[in-house]
Each structure stands twice: as structure tokens, then as C-alpha cells.
Length: 270
Ligand code: NAP
Image (cartoon, rainbow, N blue to C red; front, side, top):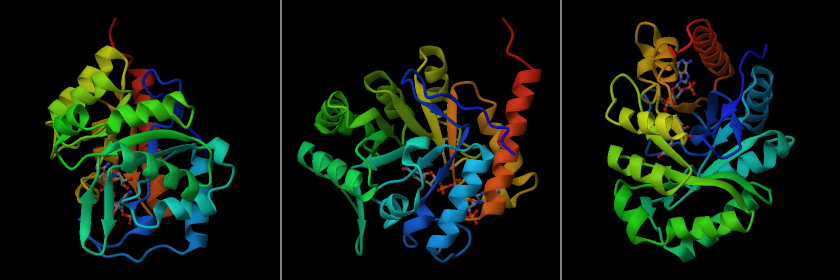
């Protein structure tokens, strides 16, 4: 089954599936807000998840240095790297004492070099600044974004942006870069105005936590209603849904395909 059509990631020239695979649970099992405990998956389970994603038409994978061994495991286990759009992040590091943040140019450069090594690739499709909440200050008062832009010019990165925590930060990220990643679900709609801005300017918004870290999937209508809620808002390029369960992945892809089909049968006026 492959009913998902790739769509533009704003004006970057990159095309992504309407849902992407979030990989926190590939490499980290501490300091998370999921409703259920879980064990890190075996290599064979990750390989099976990639195969299932490919079959379903999912081409987009989201990772970060702050997700423990996620980048390394993707580098080791993902087949045919050129068939995938890989997004990673800079700025947050997660260790035994929790998270710490470094948005300096020096750290940014070293982090990208490390991500290239861990992911076993010579280019990154997308790099997002992993915000600690001080979105505007990071964008305007550190040299993180400028460093990423220089690496983009050198061809090491195809698109840059920020995973933000505020609506103002999301809008600033869209003005200064290619992509904003925002939280958006029926319990958290504040950042919907960032999606509207992307829609009107042709920039890209990626949505994280569409299932409210799994809590919405437990409610009536579950993942299906939650994904329809997000994908029906014009301006969303893709929704990153975290899962290590191939049945959940398939169910999410089916929900996304249904939303796409409804879009086609009810085109926007004008
Ligand atoms: P989420 O996608 O809203 O929820 C993921 C949780 O929902 C997982 O525990 C997953 O469990 C469960 N789930 C997924 N599909 C399901 C289904 N069909 N039925 C029932 N449960 C289902 O939230 P998230 O994981 O916090 O965020 C998603 C991704 O966004 C992350 O993996 C990460 O890549 C990215 N993210 C980015 C940031 C950032 O600051 N940039 C922050 C948070 C997350 P199962 O494994 O059991 O399916």
C-alpha cells in the first residue's frame, strides 16, 4: 500500500511525505513524557519499521543528537540513504544529568560534523535548531543560524530552520530560515498562527506532537482524528509522528492518506 503523495517542504525544493517518522524512542528512554513505559527497540525492529515506512510511502525521518543513540542507529540501519529525507537538529544535548543547550557557532559546526558521521552521510536534508524556549534570542543573539546558513552554502545541508516553542519564535524562524517545526494538536493550538504564516508565504511548517506525545491516541477517535485535525490545516507540510510500533505506523499512514483523499474531494475555494 502506498497512498501517500509527497508534498513540497515549503520553497526548499525538497518533497516530504505528509507524515514522517519520529525517532526519539529509537535511542532514548529517559526524561520523556509518554503515557506508557517502553524498551528501546532491537535493531531488527528498527529495520522492519523502515521497511514498513518505505512500503507506506513515508520518506521523512526526524532525529536529533538529544535523542540518545537515535542518529547512530539510523546511520547503521537505514538502507538506501538517498531515498530518504533526514532531518536532525543542533543545540540540545541530552546526558546523564538531563538536557543542556549550546547555540554557539563552534558547537553548531562540531554538532553537524558529528551528525554527518553518526548518520553515515555526506549531506543532511534538514537541520533544525533545537530550541530551549528562548526562540527569538537564539535566532537573533547567537551565531547558530548563521553557522547553519554557511554550512548550507557549502552543500552540507539542504534546508535549515528551528524547532520552536513559541508562536513568535515560529514566525521569526519562518522569516529568517526555511522551516519551522511547531507543536500543534487539539490541546495546543497557540502555534496555529505560524502554520497560517507558512501557508501565506510559501514557507514550510512541520508539526511535532500531533498526538500530544501519545495521550490523544488514547482518546475516542484516537490517532485518526488527531492527525486529521492537523493535516486539514493548510500550511502543514508534514507531521512527525513518533512510533516504534509498525501497526501504529500503518494506522497513522492510513489516517494521513484518508485526510489527503478528503482534501482532493473537497478542494479549497477559489
Ligand atoms: P507524538 O508523535 O504526539 O506521540 C508519540 C507517541 O504516540 C508514542 O509514544 C507512540 O507510541 C504513540 N503513538 C503513535 N502512533 C500511535 C497510534 N497509532 N496509536 C497509539 N499510539 C500511538 O509525540 P512525540 O513522540 O513527543 O513527538 C513526535 C516526534 O517529534 C518525536 O519522535 C521527535 O522526532 C519529534 N519531536 C521533536 C521535538 C522538538 O523539540 N523538535 C520535541 C518532541 C518531539 P508507540 O511507539 O507505541 O506507537
